[in-house]
Amino acid sequence: MSPDTTHHLDTTVPLLEIHEASVMRGERLILDRLSLRLAIGQHTAILGANGSGKSTLIRLISRQLYPLARRDGAPVMRVFGRDRWSVSELRGLIGIVSPAVQLDYTSDSPLEVFDVVVSGFFAARGLGLDHQVTASMREREHQALAQMEASQLIGREMASLSTGEARRVLIARALVHRPRALLLDEPCAGLDPASRRRFLESLRQLAHHGTTLLLVTHHVEEILPEIDHVLLLHDGKVLQEGSKNRVLTDEALTAAFGMPMRLARQGEYYAADVG
Ligand SMILES: Nc1ncnc2c1ncn2[C@@H]1O[C@H](COP(=O)(O)OP(=O)(O)OP(=O)(O)O)[C@@H](O)[C@H]1O
Image (cartoon, rainbow, N blue to C red; front, side, top):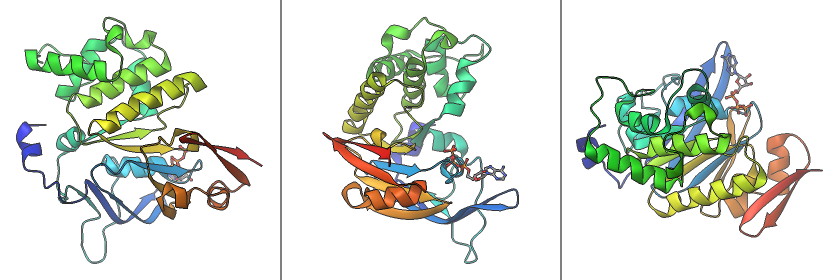
């Protein structure tokens, strides 16, 4: 995206505002009048069981799916108060990293880490002959990789990386734009408990340095101390929303996951068990 676009952002309005979004997939209503308001710096977790509509919500935000038009004609989604953005402008404002993106980068054709990250500037999967990489792009890329503690991976092929390493690289790719927000879908999928904690600590650093985090997950364990706002999604609807101390209870998790759940505090984090 061009620097001009971010220049004219109205940062007094919410970074993301979804107002009564209903989304159909096939014949089914998958999101049912879902509303969400995300202010700058309001780190948020969207927690829900399999099939609750999380991926559909992400696809709505990334404009891969469209909501039903509202009767009153009002826009369903606004980013910084505006409803009309090109997909590439949006990508520069809200970086998205999901398992689907990761699969795309780690399977088949060989791609080298540095090329993958810098290609973020061109919204391309890798570098092409027509991509002019400038010195400032390279500098920004080094910063983004350092932010994700992934500088040592330069030179490696994506397909050779562990799940956690590849995810760090893809977040660095999203960070080259200095997005205002990062939307992370199942950020810890495939990570062992120690890698998960190290990875979450890197995300905490991003949160401290001005990136608003929106985490979409099944796991309360991934709710970082910096995240205070939690939205529980159930069957395409918001079951509860508010500060985590209020929303995260045995009763609410039991309702969200459809099975008795017990919640425990673990220092600044949470854990949950069935039973
Ligand atoms: N193309 C489709 N046609 C019909 N139903 C669909 C389609 N895609 C998804 N669904 C249904 O929509 C519901 C929500 O799916 P979605 O993938 O958004 O959930 P999710 O919360 O991301 O689940 P998971 O955690 O398992 O990835 C599910 O019941 C799913 O079967």
